[in-house]
Image: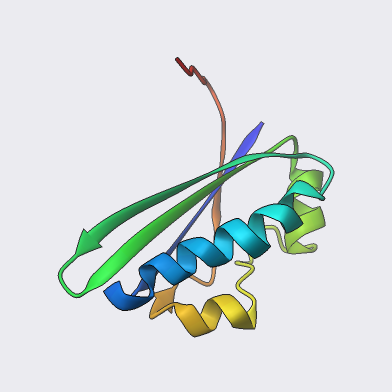
Length: 103
């Protein structure tokens, strides 16, 4: 399994709207992609901005490429998300999941 990690920031006033966008638009779209296994959205408030770390889980690199296209490290940030974000990474990173444990 692969973990795909990407970061973006919003202004504090836009943070809840960004979370709603993820819940209402992004997660349903991801759920329709074969090989998508889950998502964690981490949020922390910083001075003047809310930082988001988005970790998605994928069955394989081929599954990631169903989402990203042939350049697996290319960040996928549609215009609606870009309008809510103050800044965002243009590349994602990938890690093999060596161990997972949930209680």
